[in-house]
Image (cartoon, rainbow, N blue to C red):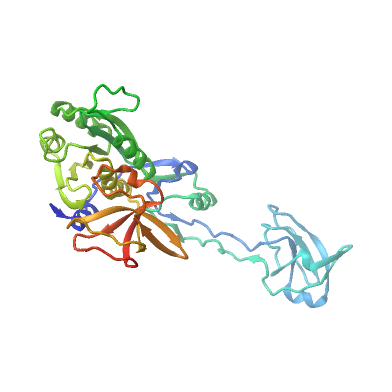
Length: 399
């Protein structure tokens, strides 16, 4: 088995020969990763523009105290009147500044008497005038390739008249849970050895949350012929196949054998990590198979550690998971000489994160309920030892 850090480094260094892209209508691109740079093709604004409702003036004319109203300049109208000495033009938010004017005095600062304004409060030169390129300048890189598109990006691209945008396709992730003991939702239990499957459903939720497209293929029996057929079919339909169970060393753990026999290149098999030491990652061209352990907590944690980064990698995205520093509210007992990911309660107090283990059970890697609550994963390396109250630790947040 390899060191956990080595397994993550191997995953980071995988080269993808061909990224899949598609063109999407602008508002339908929300949540996708941009596959091209967005560069401004014009200045915004293109011309000096009013930022308020008021009167466009020549700044030095404020000393006159009274100015004649020479016209009105609604937003969206073409400029027809020039501001000359001793006059002003009523101008509205978003209107082009009339030629000759260099300052806008707000409506609140004047009193209107007939066809004149009396200036009650002066403003500095250039007040409330949006300069050319204030928002962005022609040729400026506004949104770099690899950005996950959020609502501000939609607005900026709309202002650039970008109706369709090229994005990376979200990878399709086929999900298979192996185990003759597994029951699907609603399936009737016929003997005490049968258990309800949760892995395939939590994996579908993880894929949805972290920007993949799930293809739910359900549960299959521990039968080598069936597993071979299902994995082959899944590879044809998806970019990533993720399985749970069948990667350990039991008599009915066929998944690992099938992966080898299908001619896949094994990226790694076996990592010194708890939970999930039998994790397996393999590749066939630009498609991947991730074999996760069968226990629910173990498969969930390893999906976060290995499946989520691979989903992101296939669309050149950045990690939704992040590590932060936190302080222990109670001691942490290091139980294995491996990298450990331990469910903990996370809280934020005056800008500092704190963790405790209240209600978290110690046992096998099957205790999925440890993931309930305001939970995170306390991260320790195989070189770490037990830690005392108040010590700083690394914690993985789920984004």
